[in-house]
Length: 260
Image (tube, rainbow, N blue to C red; front, side, top):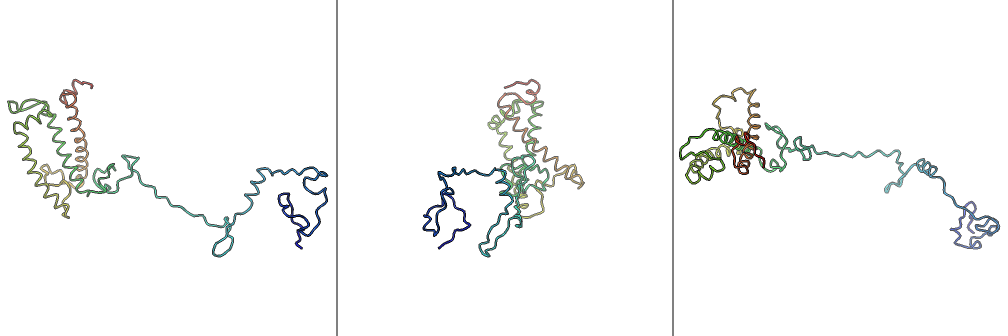
C-alpha cells in the first residue's frame, strides 16, 4: 500500500478512488463540496505578498556539466562593451572621416567618402588646383565688369556670354593651349609625388614673395590658401548661376538688387 499521509489533497487531484489508494475516504464533513460543509473558496494572496515572496527566494540555475546549482547572487555580471562611432564636427549626423586627420584645413567634412577610396595626396592636389583656379576666376569676373581692353576683340559682356563669344573668335583656343601645357607639367609632378617622392601636394616651387620661407608661418599660409580656395569655388559657382538667372553682372546685382 502507498501511504499518502501528510500529502495535501485538492479537488483537481482526485483522479483515483480512495479504495485504490489503500485507505478509507474522509468523512463527508471533510470532503470538498460536501452538503455538510460550506463550499471551499480559493483566494489568492495579495500581490505585495507574492512579490515579497518571489524577491526573497534566490534564483538558481543548474550547470549542464557539473550538475551544481549556481546562485544568481554570486554570479559575476557580464560587462558589455559598446564601440560608439565618433561623429563629424561639421556634419554631426555622419561619422568622422578617418583619413583626413592631420591635413591642413581638416574640417572633418567628407560626406560622400572620397577619402576612403582615393589617396589623400591626390585629393589635396586636386583641391588646391581647383581652389587656385577659382580664386583667379573670381577676381577676373569682378575686374572685367569695371575694366576691359575694349575694341572689337574685347567687347564688354557678361562672362557667361563671353565664353560662347570667344569660342567663335578663337580666344578660348588660346586659353586651352595654355591650360594643356600647365597640366602636362603638373601631371608629371603629381605622378612623382604619388610614386613616393617627398613633394607635397600643390608644391610647384612657386613662391616669389617668400611666404613659405618662415617655417613657423607656413602652416598659417597653407590654411589661408585652403580656406580662400574653398570659398572661391563656392563663389565662382554662385557668380555663374547668378548671371545665368538674372542676366546681370555681380557688381551690378549688388548695387541694384533684382529679386527673382
